[in-house]
Image (tube, rainbow, N blue to C red; front, top):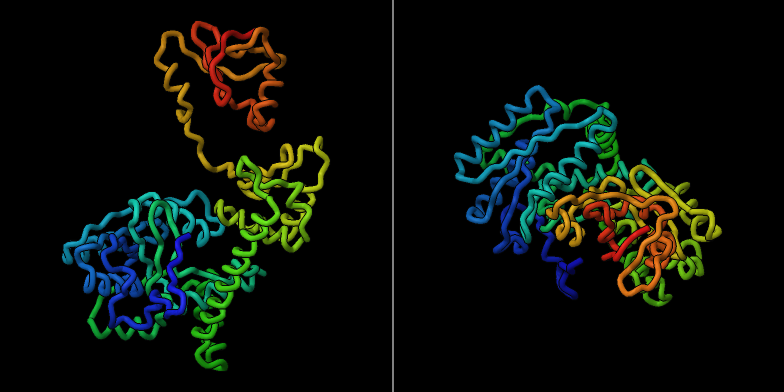
Length: 405
């Protein structure tokens, strides 16, 4: 990830008030995630004041409130008055389990797909949000990555997700809104303490704040310390990977070399690697199963899965698999070459099948060819075989054929 910090100088991303311009946003193409609530309305006013020519807006309609369509109209009318492009994205949740988390995932997935290259998505998360996130992660028993809470900046899709108000507290936001006579909408769900974040915000933090002075600022500072610790742990993981030749020529983790390290270093590398793939952090129990996978016998077909995520081991290499990622049906160049020919068909391997590769005098067992190509067993049955007039002409990831038996 790009280093957004200048050594020996103050972090220029630290916007501590809403009176000055944010130097990071200069000459950037800005996309604001606008809900219509006070936080995002304040950020809209701030961005429109300083960067009016470089701003567009996206509103996500989750269809969870009976007022949802009214919020869409409010945001679109506001942007129309300000002459700002406003896009609405409809989001539908498939079930009611963990609504907050599912809505967040779908929202950011949709936003990432809507970002053009080098655009900066700005969201209105602030210091109080950061404090709530830290407590939520603490109560879940999260490690350093969770306690680091929300980063100020990170890559998202082809662009960047940036939280310019992360050092601004709620009091400052309300004061800014009143000073500029802004109008906003109130989300009726914000009063529902069945949501854990609302419970913390409405019931827990006010009581804690009556005892601990500047609590949200203090908790945000703790999150910053955890973020710095996270950077160190990831840097250590990179050092361990390079020093111990743990990354193989294929770019995968060599399980045999990884297994030579102490357990806490192994876990650090695995957590770092999983975060790079965007995988959900495994529980302690799952992590122990992954450690056991490193030492399992080669014929055990080792596999560890949690949710849609899997780690498999094959020929001393670890494969990280997200079963929810759609495969591109047409990514194979041979598919494009053959698909428009007469009598084209796609088939899959059969038991005991033999093939003849170009330049070979005799046919070979397809199973042996796939083994020699280092294609893991769980991928072999899904490889496409391209036939013309019932004759095998090519196979995905293997190449052209002369004939088959």
